[in-house]
Length: 297
Image (cartoon, rainbow, N blue to C red; front, side, top):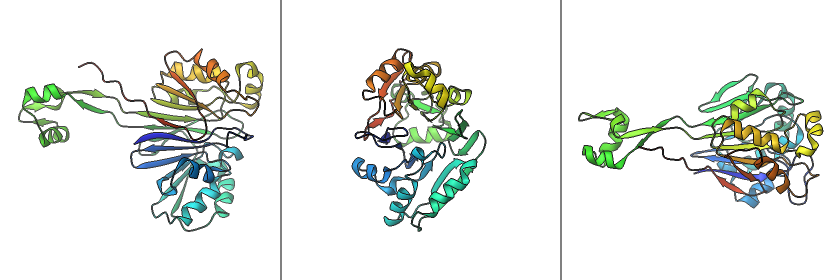
């Protein structure tokens, strides 16, 4: 199962229909909770998300709308008796804020603090890159290793059936048949999460070639001056980011409360997103990772 569960889509000020930030990425056996703002614990109930599903919590930065829900989430995990380790990733400069938030949460889970202060891999397949905001901020990218797609017609022609197909994948050659003879390369799926930032090199690197790109769309293009002042993206800039990176699907979120109809922002993003599909997120949406397109054999 690989899907994004949207728990909240508001930026600094929540609205009657939009909770503060919160996003759970279900990725095979992992559950990555990004930027839990106030009310995330309650949104998890509405979305049918169990605290046991969370294995990592990833903070882009320590502005309140991206982290004030942390104590409630941790307390719920303790109440529910979560036994597995929970890794908490965050910018190192936010250490004091993170420790203060953790200190008011109920104890009882195996919480492992993992600050980072530079671009690079922070866990298997999970990397961070710096963004350009008013405080130290990082975006996250999760990438599946590349593999190969088996071609049934070639397997049949080579006489490879049943468990032998798996053995060929593991060993690379079987009875004179090479893996390359019966398969084609398959790029790993990719996911990127980009919040509060002005356009920058870090955001471009995170967005490059991903299947699902989640990014802020705080301001309308008409309010570009405000976006520049507060180091945020406009909807059109989010579209540019997706188009330039060749992203498969762009999920817009982190909307300012000044916009009652975010379809206006979605339209601005679409005008500049090229072939990328644009989805304006709503609270409690579930968005599956797009299926890989099978390359020609």
